[in-house]
Image 1 (cartoon, rainbow, N blue to C red):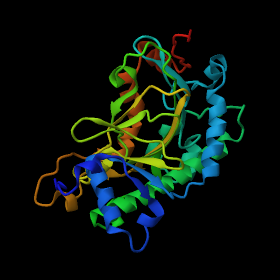
Image 2 (cartoon, helix red, strand yellow; image 1 turned 90 degrees about the horizontal axis):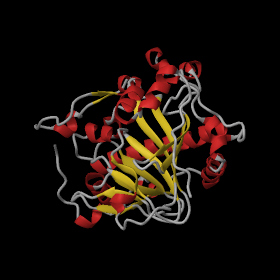
Image 3 (cartoon, rainbow, N blue to C red; image 1 turned 60 degrees about the horizontal axis):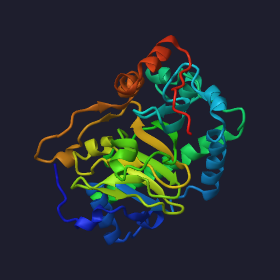
Image 4 (cartoon, one colour; image 1 turned 30 degrees about the horizontal axis):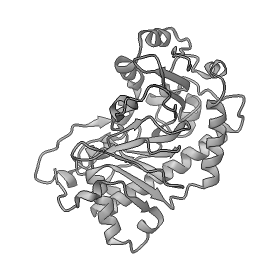
Length: 349
């Protein structure tokens, strides 16, 4: 693995990158160096001038926000009818039975026929056998979600081009195939209404992890910096809420391609603030038939530090893998029976 030792320690903060300027014909070399340092140390950047219309972001969030603000008994009807963990509305409790997170997930395609028409190879069509749940209360949500996904995917493509430029390689170095496999989720994190423990570790709403994507494009909103990224020394830095910015995480697949030169952005979410925190994320994995493994350019005369990862095959097993690790017994039973599942949570006082 090639290690970048030239980056200053302060580069472990979250940089804000002007995407349009950085991709210009004659980019600022200092800006590219800052990007490379962030990619090597933190794996999280914020981008502005990213090309996603603010009107689209706001329209989507207003629509999905009205759904997530519905009474719980109404949202229960928006759960996946087959208990698919990546479709429709979900909620889950923490170890004390308190609401930790609500999520609305939208599959890339509504059904196998739509996936086939978009060019998805036949062996992966079963990924879309479980229907999306489109709330009748928001008939425009499907159109908004499709537009939002397409715009975020374009951001991911452009950021990958930018990382290639910062690393001094052609963008074609990365074997990015189309159609890309993506997943799309909206997370709602409740305000902290429980006795204050005084430590972030005891107020975690999303445990620390790195995404298994190539890149993740996220939008966050709220009144506090609850999203935190992990520095190389293990400490945590808040990701500020910058108006109009999108957050882009390096996923473990880009780390794999670069043989560890770009680090996967480990992050977590801590409770706080006076309003519900919301984030919308598109996870981009590359093409269905893409085999992600360390590229020779980044291995050099050394050894590959990672094995091969087949995007489509891993996706086919993603639900079973998820339930094996995170599924509650009643959730697994509902999935096996093909019936809805709604987790029980403690009602707020």
